[in-house]
View (cartoon, rainbow, N blue to C red):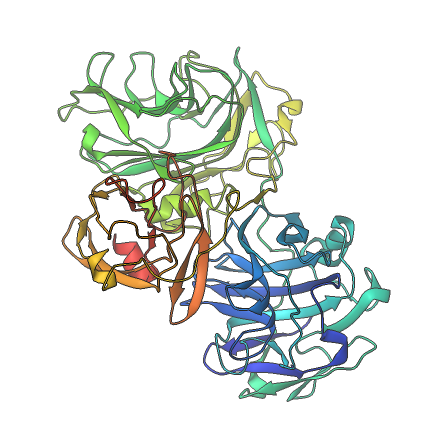
Length: 610
């Protein structure tokens, strides 16, 4: 068990191991990295482990970006020759996490797996064009890269390197259930080529290499007080491992008469669901007279929200999009501002602010308070039950924002709500089988409103958790960046020179851009423009590089690429996590197909304000 970790200040502190033979890893070698980290809300990219040369940035790096994504990259020449893979889920929550990156030596991004807390995580392929050596005489560093660039503001423990692609079983073994084991005796010890235990057995300023190679590290710009006793333990945040399956006949969970919200109160409901059925409530506090509030799946597979004073008076609104009854896991978040009108309702599905269709909008200040029970599945009177799987249900006494909605969706993986967005407003959280004892579903918020599984069996708690899948998102077919700017255009300002008002939908479209006839689409240097929100405040946005057709794009700040995402430009529900999507559609026939420009707010404080 670890007894110490190392704390870095995010300014200039790092551990330098040097250019040692055992860590001169080539793109054709299979290897794995393992480390524990604890980082909260990074201001920029954080290099946790790296061997990168200056200039071309040749080598390898393991990074936590400002959105909390874990990125792994092998580079010959920055951008033009290398690959980058990043998790969809985010881990900047200030808790200890264990990350393992495994690589098969194929020189392809598909040869990478990223495990966090022993779970294989879904990843996005940001680039994949590695074809030359990654060897460089740069030193290996824990915290930062090529000197004092992108240092770590946080803690790390038990950094290990293996000269093989670890299996999922081996990853689980070295995770140790959340308590770091002694890696010199646990796991594939014969393949351990580097182990820095970050304080255990160390004498300042040396961080010993506990493997047989003895490639010790040197604490640089650090003090002996940077050894701290805050270490990973079994308090590591657990992901969902269970869900509750309802039969649609008579099964529901009841919490009693709790969580009343009136027409003039702000609140939000968050729920993960999977169903092929419609017409039932996922969660509600609605009585037999239809007074109250709830979220349901409507007849077309729409996500619907009701806030009613009676059967004939109230707010009733649903997503225009249909088909969420497709048998896949989805995350729904319904927010209410306290206006008691449709204008005060927002419905997010899988992190997307959905367009809404109004059914009723005549609450007119009438109360929605009742004496009904808060139920998961169905209404208090036993009606509107339906067959569905449900996971991690949360209630907040706040209207959550778009940023918070994206954070809860978390790249299609339920996150710990007590450490997640708006945690101080959490008034109900049921983990739907995780650490529950039948027939009680524990309220993991501070409210203590435990639920009782009614007309159910212990077998209704099933091993089918929301969000647990791993998929590599490939680049578009035939993708190849084209160097150079748009021909015939004197300045970038001719292409982008506008202030875009951000409406509720966060999807403004600007038409009729007219670059010179015959121009070809190519990569542009990163540029900025201002975006105003509804209150008139400005936030600086970075525009990505542009590529042909549905291509790939990247956010660049001070020369450092933060992340890249791509989506079919024709998709009305394409998701750009942790940012705002702006699509500019060419209308003059100058280019073959649509060109998509996307922008991300990289200033987290500014992002919160939008």
